[in-house]
Structure formats: C-alpha cells, structure tokens
Length: 144
Image (tube, rainbow, N blue to C red; front, side, top):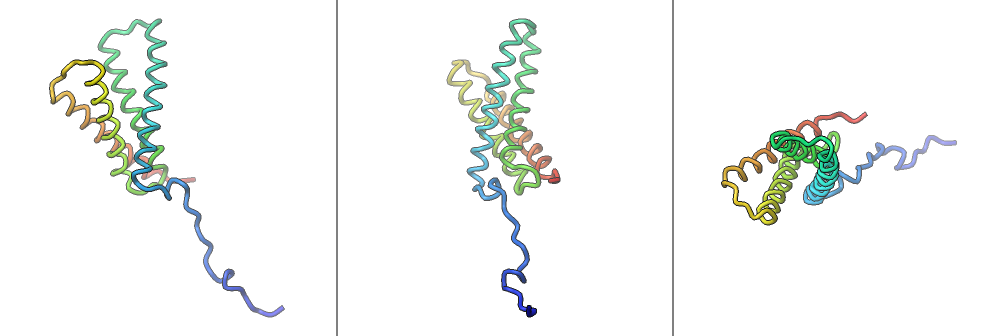
C-alpha cells in the first residue's frame, strides 16, 4: 500500500457536544426551573407526611421551608448547568430568580396574605444569590 491518507484521517477528531450544551440558555433555564419545581413538590410532600408524626414547631417549619427552597434551587441549577458548564453563575442566578419570583407570586395569589415588600424582596434576593453561588460551584466541577 502507498502512503496516501484520506482527508478524514488527517483531521483532528471532533468532540461531541452534550445535549445540554446544545440547548439555548432559555431552554437550560426552563429545564432548571422545572427540575427545581419538581424537587420542591417532592420535598413538600415528604415533609407534610413527616409532620404528622413529628409535630414540628413553627420555627422548625420555617427553617425546613428555606432549606427546601435552597436545595431545590441547587438541584435545578445542577440540571441546567451541568458539570463544567458555561455561564454557570448567570444561568444559576436566572434559575434562582425565576424560581423565587414564581414562588412569591403563587404565595401572594394563593394565600391572600400581604407580606411586606421587603419580605418578598429578601426571598427573591436569596434565590438569586443561592442560584448564582450554586451555578458557580457546579460550573467549576470537573468531569471525570
């Protein structure tokens, strides 16, 4: 055989992009929001079942509620950004913002209670900060 190589053999191999990296930022944001909502629903259902046996105080319920929100945001950000993802901080903050805006809006509509504006604002700020931090952490994780 001669020393002829095909053009395909001289080209460097292509890296396949994952399905997550082909999504638009809006698609990734929506994916993270939906995952966060699903995690919240599962955790609230589980906590409601546990409340029947544990009978926690109001303070414990408030703390668990905040932990469920932050945990849901983290899982949603992980689903949106993925390990070694790009724009982790920005997409994470977007997932946190959209999740908390939706939660504040639903709470205001369903409960009929009017909380002070600063309470709503602090919840939204917590979501943006938590989502941004989670996005930075998740984007910095290395793939194996």
